Length: 155
Image 1 (cartoon, rainbow, N blue to C red):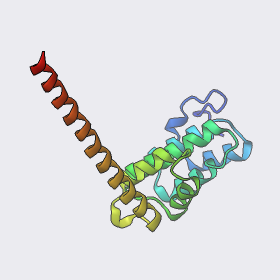
Image 2 (cartoon, one colour):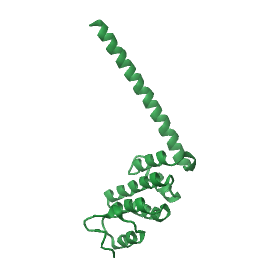
Image 3 (cartoon, helix red, strand yellow):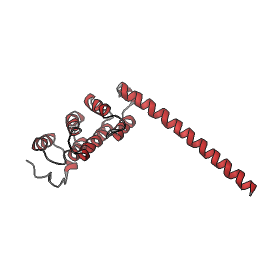
Image 4 (cartoon, rainbow, N blue to C red):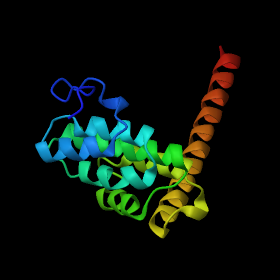
């Protein structure tokens, strides 16, 4: 067991670069596995870290589970893609749970052509929704500006 990682206090876990150390900690039932999987996502190849992120997404501690989804988002940013099991885990969680930011990161950093069908539909939905919200806000601002101008002339 490496003494570089302080599993008890959670120190230096973001620097974890050993999938084998994470596996050993998982078997021991250590706390901080979600935090450590972020470190793996930052320092290890996607193929090595992907199964561990999926395992961390099933941890009983909600906070650590949330960190696992953060790790998935980092993996999407750093690699420009995810593995099929990560795509499926994000889809299973849905866009209104822990995965909301990880899905947004995936839609932002993974090229459209690399996305599975469900993510392509989410990308289209998010793009259309954002454009409609922009148009609505621009309309509201235009009406407010016009109203201010009319009130300024009448005063």
